[in-house]
Structures are given as structure tokens and as C-alpha cells.
Amino acid sequence: MTSFANILSALEQRPPTQPDRRQKLRYPLDLSVSFRFSSGASPFTGAGRVVNVSSGGVLVVSKRVVSPHECKMGARVEMSIEWPFLLDGRVPLQFFALGRVVRRGEAVFAAAFEQHQFRTARTTNLLEWPANSAPVLH
Image 1 (cartoon, rainbow, N blue to C red):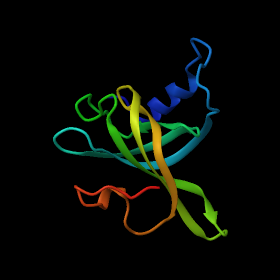
Image 2: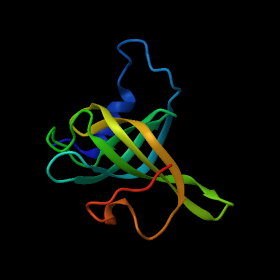
Image 3: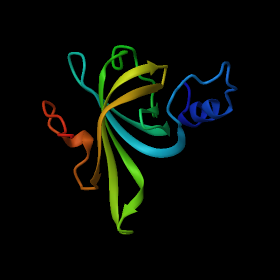
Image 4: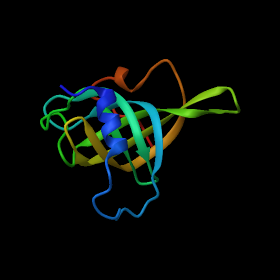
């Protein structure tokens, strides 16, 4: 089984095999993320780290291997990312996003954003939402 640190290390050391065709500039980050895939018979929740983000999407490394049954291409994913900056220098923020899985690996997935918003951090997080509810994003 591959460790979380080994996956991050491999991603950082991987040489590009072809020119990057993506149109959005990516920003490398190392932020905590909670996520929930809502496709399939039962939702799958997990946690991991954001590797990079752009205005169009995010690359996430899961803390554990995610099977193709749990994370399918095109699956809808809800994410709660702990944002590194404080509102007014004192209020913690979270970046909430809804998206679709556009690429996946053994413990990695990329999602294209469909909706997103910043929220002030509360004690309730993404993984504590009722199973049949979704965040209201504008």
C-alpha cells in the first residue's frame, strides 16, 4: 500500500511527459480537504490534501486508495478545503466547491469546478451534513 507522503513525493518529482495543454494557471498548494462523492448507491466520504488548484478545478490526493467504484469518472464531488488566509485577519475560511471528477488515479483525483464559494469556518464540516442534503452554492 502506498503511503500518503510517498504519493505527494511522487507527484512533485514526476517530470512532465508532454507540454501542459491546460488553459488555467495552476497554483501549488498543500491544504486539507474533506470530500464526498455523491454518485452511486451510497456516498463515499474521505479526506486528503489539495496538491494544486486553478480557477477551473483542483487536484486532490486522498489519504487512502479510492476504488473506481467509490470515485468514478464524471462523478459529482463536494469538497470543503481549509483556506490558508483569514478574513479580516482573524476569521478562518473554507472554500466549498461542487464539481465533477475529470481524472482519477489510485489515490488521486482531479475535479472541474461547477460551483464554488468561500464560507466562514464553522464547527460543522462537509462530512457532518445529512446524507441526502447538498450544500447550497451560488
